[in-house]
Image (cartoon, rainbow, N blue to C red):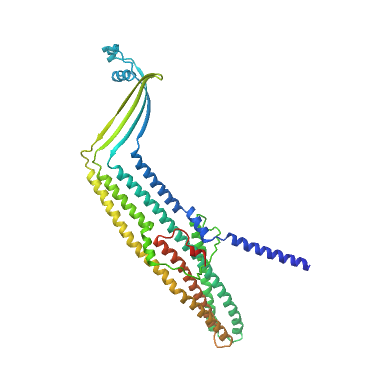
Length: 450
């Protein structure tokens, strides 16, 4: 019987061990979550599609440098005099007898199989370079837009992920404090029944416990909400089970250099995108301003006409073409519109740079403030823990009330949660500062270590 009991205990231990192992194995790290978001999120797909579209626009603009080839074929039957005359010439079977007036005026119906191949190419078009360069600028802007979306998604993922860790940690803190408080209140209930604890103190203590329980409900709700957001970012259902691994605490907070951050703004994807958009608008305006300039083209056509597949004549045409738009009433307004768009794009780029510098400064100061708060928050937690320990000793000696003990529990819970909030602000502030500087290309290295 004892052997059976020992075997059951061993199996239970193995089951608990395997259960814990499976939970840990299913827990996702920030790096894994970020990789899923960046590969599956619709925002990244849209940015990729926009970049592909811009690259297609470059190919379309460059196509003007290459000749175009067209091939056509047709079958015609008729006795129209003009058609008949030209068909006989095209088929190389016109004879002297075909000049008879009656045959010219009333020809017999003729069949004509026609095949035609032609090449057309612009030799000199003053607008072409501007159109190609404008398309290239749009392509570069789209690539920077893709970088921008990637960094924004990554920053959002880090913030939601850290929000889950914060809510989970606060939930654990509250559970511990509630458990301790319930134990204290259990003893206080016995003492109250004996008349050793004032009813007012007892009920005040219970109200404090109720507040802690409300905070726990709110923390657990925040966990569920944040997990739903993270599931959506990973293109999963909101209610899917999601376990994450990681810790908010940082033993060493990474340093950020303001001069280095501001230097990074020159390569910020948002500002690069604005710069390329401005360049593209300028090239577009330049191309439009040359719309009245002459265009030289070359062409060549080979044509075959026959009354059957193996009989007929071949002809060709080749030459140059000059087109000069002498008067286009819309040319001036179109040029002015393009020039106005170029100035507007340039001003938009300058405004974006100013906004980005302000945003970077605000994120940097937020992170620095969190670093300054960290030692104060840690000291406050130590003070609250010491105060609670003293409250408990004094309560047991009859010199403090149960309400004082519960207030100490609530103060410790608040200080512990505040410390975790500082850790959250540090991590999110660090990631958001890198994003504001345009340097959040991947999960930051400090997130992989304590």
